[in-house]
Amino acid sequence: MLLSGICWSVVYIELIHSGLKYKTYGMPLFALGLNFAWEVIYSIDELILGAASLQGWVNLVWATLDAIIVYTYFKYGQKYYTDEVQKYFIPFSILVFITCFAMQFAFYFQFDTVTASQYSAFAQNAAMSIMFLVMLFQRKDTEGQTILMAVAKWIGTFVPTILGGFLESINIYIIIMGGICFVFDALYTIFLKKKKIKNRSSEYI
Image 1 (cartoon, rainbow, N blue to C red):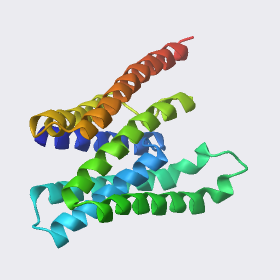
Image 2 (image 1 turned 90 degrees about the vertical axis):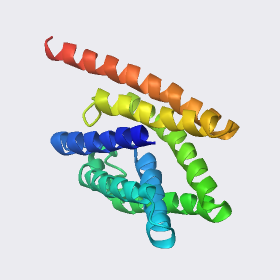
Image 3 (image 1 turned 45 degrees about the vertical axis):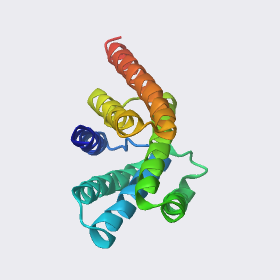
Image 4 (image 1 turned 135 degrees about the vertical axis):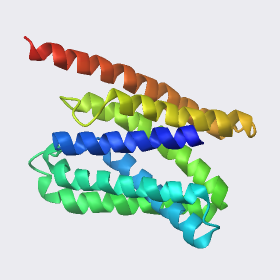
């Protein structure tokens, strides 16, 4: 859990640093919304409604870092929309964040806290892994995304998969969702490296 926490912190810090440096945002919108909603909800659950556990404080740190990534999205994200829909950027983005909170609350109120946090986390991570790869293919450059971030994200999700899917108990849900994350995180890392090499090569042509 410590290794996973460190890796995800590296992911957030890299996204913030690269986002501010290149005036972009590095996390796909829906992934950002689901991630931020999860961290806010389970920070409040642990620190205010619960026993103020260490995980609650970690969630709060993550939520704070994610809030900065949210800032980079609203600051620099509009340029990635076509001219026809740029005027809807703010209302559409707000709707997405509201939707993401609603989806996370659906897990929270349907299951007990531990199950809700685990199941929603792995569901959003699987979706996030896919969305990162899609974003990489759609963008012309790799600004806002780094190999360190990609590897840290890969390890940060793989470790909890081993812990929750095999070591604590055999959990088929976590194994399947974690397996999806593993495959797409691997593909994302490989294609990101290839695209960075290609972009570097084109600079010297």
